[in-house]
Image 1 (cartoon, rainbow, N blue to C red):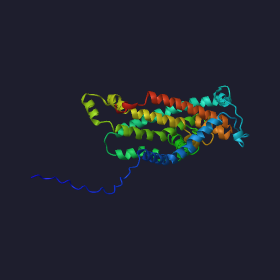
Image 2 (cartoon, rainbow, N blue to C red):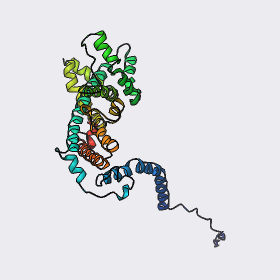
Image 3 (cartoon, helix red, strand yellow):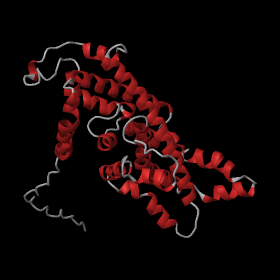
Image 4 (cartoon, rainbow, N blue to C red):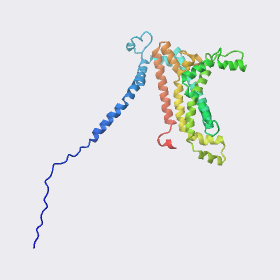
Length: 330
């Protein structure tokens, strides 16, 4: 008896289900790219309006003769090439000698202010890393100058340094009797000392804050092991503290150095629109030549030279001092 296998009935194919189409990867990337460009567009426009375009105009002004006569039609001001730079670097000319003198004075100002601020900040940071009663209050007091706006603090110093009834002269002359004459602190040779003191008062809390944050990342076990080996506090500072915060130190010196070389606010508020010759820095000199003497061409040339010098120094400093790549975790 034979059996015949019956073939199962095959169902008729129904309508095909539509397969959902996945968005193309390239299309999605283009949309993400457009969104990213749209998000950064306001920042780019502000950067162009606030920094890039004025910087380009400043460079262009350095190559034209722009003064009070040609200011009305400044777009048609005559092009004079490198004449403004020659005047600015010529030690025999009035502008050149003043510019070179202010460059040297600014360098001395930066070295003094930065060095003393760093010493004060390091001493305060090392002192506050130890545990003692009242440490929080002392830390707050150290940061008070940083919390006060620069203009307000400088105005207060201006009143205290007043020759007639300032607090400084009252202490020196009336209370301590160190001198019979009331010295002038805002004009003459003492003006440079006043500028350095006010700048240190304004800058050192920022250095203190950065160094304190860096010191708090140093493991305490390292100091404990060094103490067990008989290392003194001074030796621990030179062999442990400074090497382990060298990256923070390098960044701090670069930031404060650039700030101080471009310092304008403190001299302007302390001395007024025209700084005394003994305390005349580069930025106030550029302002005086541009807006008091109406020599915008010389001011633009000085600005370009200052920008170029700071750019070169910053590049060399970053390449030689700041950590690179894998050195960050050393």
